[in-house]
Image 1 (cartoon, rainbow, N blue to C red):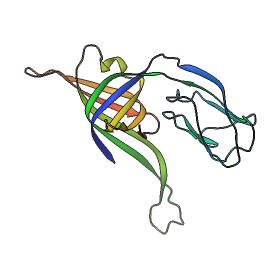
Image 2: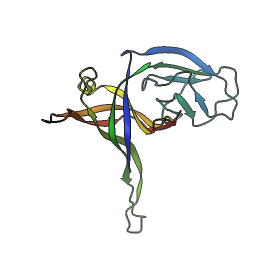
Image 3: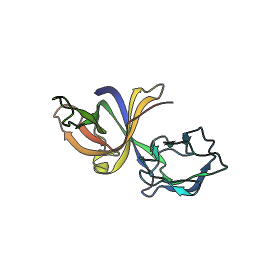
Image 4: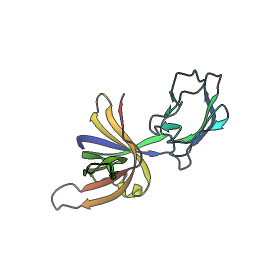
Length: 203
């Protein structure tokens, strides 16, 4: 499925390492499955999550949204005081440059699961998902996309900029092409590959 829009922005981490948070805690109640960290833009795969002293596994025991900082547990943590603990790194982000005329493709794999019991028809199960995007922009000397090729950044794709309705996702610039025209502004076309989920956000 392709999504199209007019304006977008690239946000880059202020530091390579990020800021470390040790022992941010929540209290389980046997009901709540989603908790939100105090910070957004979590450094992917930097987190350690424990419940009652037992370290949990991402993908099996919990899912984490690295943009919003939401952690969703497969099973609600048991009732306890500060018995859910999370260590993680997060980034402070700065807007670097913008783009226009963007297009985002959200993709999902279908894995064949045909067996002898499939009655002669192929069967499939959901596989991995990903997203990729392309956009254009006018070339600027003080904010060069070439500086970020191959580096993780946050891509923001606005559906309604005035009301901050947008998609966001960690991604990597995989290609930048500069087009120098004789009688107009220099333009760049940019290709991006998402890393993780694309997140819908508003305000």
